Image 1 (cartoon, helix red, strand yellow):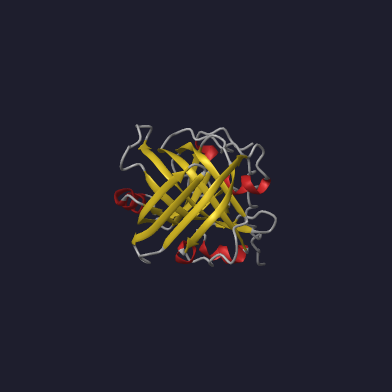
Image 2 (cartoon, rainbow, N blue to C red; image 1 turned 90 degrees about the horizontal axis):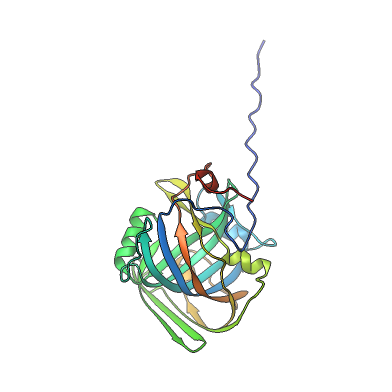
Length: 269
């Protein structure tokens, strides 16, 4: 008589963590410190099916009311430091512009997925590409502020496509006292998803609540989204925000199946 093995059912996916303005997980050990200053958040809505092939293995598009988003985020990186040491004033301080998507992994952890990160310092670019496998690129960049208007420019130097560029000007408006659900979805991100040596990893972060402002987009020319494999914008962004910035701590990477909170954190609410 044949004995049939019981069917092995795949594990149920973990509940997706909530979107909250404050960190959902504790970062108990510090890998990196840095500040993100003078940020502008430009976002366009996308069909999740367009984004899915561009995400790391083990993640799916994170959605809000059926849509996912691509962000173009220029800012000033300030004083990157390792293991709690004082941040570097020159090598750790530079303009940056990233193209980012939003994903959730099998542990229910929401996070950012970077498609490209332009930076004006070559050495940090090389370190981030080799140590973290992040798609950093070297670019000539400027940030200029005049009163309530801020302008960011970037032109890629290496690697290809050389010359990929962006030029963004926004006018900073009033402080947002109560961010909307969408505004929290686009900004309150407590980690990043990436692939390292063929395996998906999650790098958790923690920082104070974002101080957000309304912003008016005065000018935007860019081909960074197309260079990152995404469709170029067909209209104005659905959300434009500004923040003076926050100080940030990153914890050590958490592999799949090991939630960041299980590495000494306070746990998920």
